[in-house]
Image (cartoon, rainbow, N blue to C red; front, side):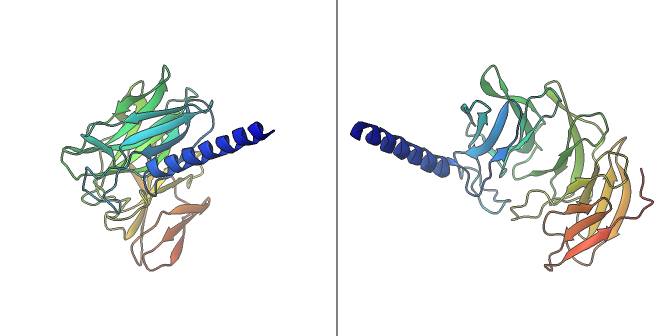
Length: 280
């Protein structure tokens, strides 16, 4: 009996040590993405590093690795070379190509060439890079993953990205085609989904505001003084532009089929009713 109690105590101590190591290794303030299905079902950033001093997300600590856990509980880690960091807070777990297996969508930054969108997946038991966009092209240039949804009605998820949301804010819609991320439309400027220092990586949201069963993208303009509703079914179409009394400073969300909650820098939350005749 004494040996049994000792074994139980040792197992509990080992579990405590593992939990402490997990907490120490994870990106400070970083979250754990969770999903059901196959492939990765948990994902987070590990190995915090200060090798990139951009600090656009509120501190100069970025992720040095990506860690995932699959449905069987097996853990895998991809460690970046010193040239890169994850300039992100929490990864995203989604099935982009509809094959039933989750992919991980991340913001990875080349310290000499800026940010890119990268898709990782479990392939032959290893966590591997599956697809990526080119880096923006200059250091200290970041992008925001605004939202992920079926914007086009093809039954698959697309990634809405705002490149350089602090300077120009160029919207790009990406689709995963085999092992490539393809831009569906020419980039459109004038949007912002983030401000420097904010830990909220996207102020945007999605919702079916037209009743057609498809997601519209709802995001601020570059000055964050207007709410813009976009249809992305066949190009970038502006459905609504609404002036605001103050700047958006926290993520918006849809309260009802035709009502958007818009948090303002004043501390108030504006409830914006969408016109009945809004249609694409």
